[in-house]
Image 1 (cartoon, rainbow, N blue to C red):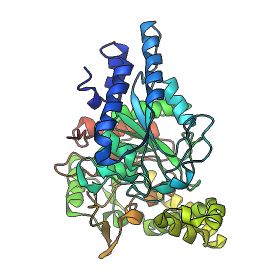
Image 2: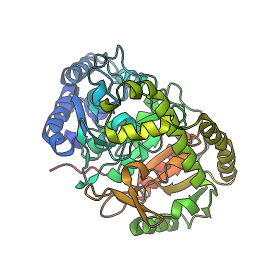
Image 3: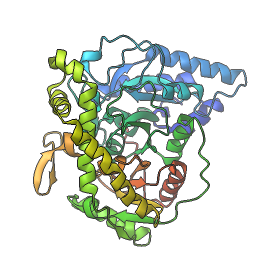
Length: 448
C-alpha cells in the first residue's frame, strides 16, 4: 500500500486508516520519504517534523486498534506555512532573522483543531519572507519551484503549501492569504485553495502581516477535500442552507492584461455555464491601490522597531518594501480604509443581483523564474509584487473566495469563485457543481 499512498487525497487517506487498509504510521512515513526525495528539487519544505509526525500517527493507530473514532481526518499527513506556531519551534514567518527566536509554547489554533480531528503534522513549508511577495523566493530556504514545470514559480506567498499538494507529497496544507497568497499559488500549481470570509476562521497563533486582510485556509486537490478541511478549521458550522445559483463574470479590470489562454478559458467557462453576464466593479483599480497602501502601512508599522534597530537582518527585497510602508502618512492609510466602505457598497450591489462572481485568479500560467515579470498596461512589472492584480480587490472587502483550477490542457491556471460574506459553505457547494461537471479539476503532478 505504501508505494501509492503519497497520491491519496484527504478523504481517501482518512478512509484507508479507519478501515485499516493502511496505518497512519504508514501514511506519515510515506510522506516523510517523499519529502526527503523531492524537496531538494522544489524547495517547498523548511523543517521536517519526523518525531512529532510519527508520534501523532502512532496515537491515531492506537485509537483505531481500540475501536475509537480517530476523527474525520484520521492519519492524514499535512504541512503548514512557516508562520503557524508549532510547539517547541521558532515561528520564523520565512525570515532568517527569526530562526533563533524563542520557541512557540503552543500550537496555533488551526493546528490544534486539525490534531483533534486526527490529522498528522509532518512539516513546515516555504513562503516569501514575512509573507510579503507572490512568488516564494526566500533568501534563507530557497525558491520554491512549480511541480508542473520546475522552470516556473509556484506563486506565493504560500508557495510551499501549494507545491507539496500539487506535487503529490502531502494530501493537504495550510497557508495564509492577505492579498492573494493562497489563491495565486493554488491557481499557478493547479489545485484548490480557499480564503474564507475575513475573520471567520481563527488565525490565532500565526505571525501577522496586515491585520485588516490576514486569513488562513487550506489547499487540496479536490473540492471535497477542501470542504473537509474547512469544516474542521471552523469553530462553528455555518447554517447556510441556500444554494448559489446565479453566477456572473467580472469584467473591466478583471479582463485586462490577460494571457490569451486565460482569456479563452474564461470564454469557455462562461459558455459552459450558459454564457454568463459580464458585470463591472468600476473602482476595482482603486481598490487594489488601497489594498496596497493598507498592506504596506500595516506591514511597515508591525516591523518598525526591528527595521530601526537591525534593518540588515531582513532580505533586501522585503526590507525595502516594509521601509516604504513605514514611511506612509497615517492620513493616507485612513483614506484607504475609508474607501473600503465605498467599494463594499459596489460589491453588495452586484450580490443583490448575482450569487457568485467569477474572476481570473492570475493573468495566466506561472511566470518563468528567469523572466520574473508580468505585463500590466503594456509594461513589464515584477511578478513578486504584482501577481495579485486580480486578487487584491477581492480580499480588500473580506469576501470568501475559492481558487478553482480550470480543466485545461498544458500549464495550470484557475479562477476565483467569489461569494458574499458568510456564504463560505454555499460557495463550496457551488464549486462542487463545477467539479462534477468537469469544468474544474485539481492536479496531482507526481514528481519524477
